[in-house]
Length: 282
Image (cartoon, rainbow, N blue to C red; front, side):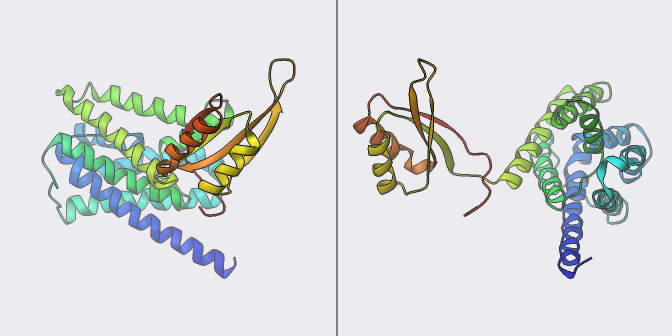
């Protein structure tokens, strides 16, 4: 193994450790004091914690071991090793913070607990993913199902989370806590998306116009030269069509609208979200 690869792996394990601390603090400081759950096997472990005398860390390991055994060959050696490490350190830290340090609730309010607990869990899981690992559970099941069928991993995870939430209805007397748990899962997913893809302030714009040459020059002069002209055939009698593809900062969208309005009233814009950008400049 090269020195560069070793350094990269060391960084990954340090990132996993940091992420595990955040995850453990989220569980101990926000979820358990307010009897809220999250998604995946962490949520299942919390449910079992509320009805048994076992520690959360013990339950996380107990729930994940069978899944790891079954899913080992689907994960890949390095990914599997880091996943085992992640599960082990999260379990140890949760019990350490809870039983040894006896950390008290950061907030005693189910709503605030669901929001900030979701933030902590989202940050932790996103950093684990960045380190090319997983916290086990639903990710393992999703990989197995996806490899054996055409079902998307995200669909499997959603089904598992829904099952856990529905199961909590039989444990919590207060239905509001179930709704708070849904809020926490939603917040976590948004935090994960934000960290992994970034909060882009740009939009993808498809400009359909008959004044391609004129608009190309004006756009390059006022917005910059980055863009692509796409050529194709229309549905009616193979009529030749041209479309300009652009990535535009949100603050400059109005400038683009004015350019099109003044120079090609028949042209129209299709504006979509830029959820992730990779490559030069990103």
